[in-house]
Length: 253
Image (tube, rainbow, N blue to C red):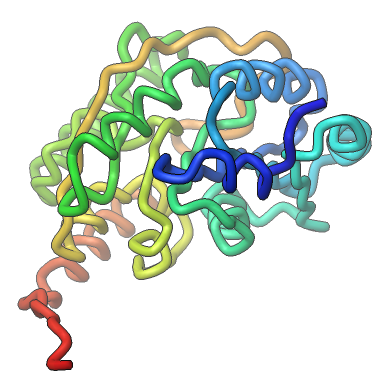
């Protein structure tokens, strides 16, 4: 039987204890496969997985309850009404017990095999770096969605100068103590590199290969969030301008 989270933590002192946060809406068919892959990817590490069922109507909650009955590292949580991906990620963060929080989308398009690479990159970068972000290669989305994403990333990069080619990739690993310092707003998960830099920390990147989802369709569109995304972009720009100084804090005793 898989060792419990606390047993694994005790047995792996000196390693990064990780909580994997998975936001999901109507992903009943994809989640068991994804969770099996996460377990395989993190074999030998201390970990827990929190899946946030964001108001699903396809029986995702039942699937998660059944899976958790035989996998003690899984902690499923449900939003009774859908609140969006950023809110789901934030709920997972608030319940996380790991020193590092890794995020991955619940649709299966992100490959969990990259999670150890993100954790290793973050650890190798040292405490001055708080975020390891995946950047997708070979995206499997529609042509229209790929062009929209490319345009949005170029616009965001030009305005925020966050040195990130692809901020929308769901694969990320972030130090939890820094995660908790970040200002929250809807769609905030798309601006994590800029927000981390705002707090005075660095960001490192790894390339990841995108893949096709096995079941279902994407839960978001292109044009329904375009205007909101632009407003968010300038909101983050304002936040960064208002943070003029990063204090250097040291104890006197």
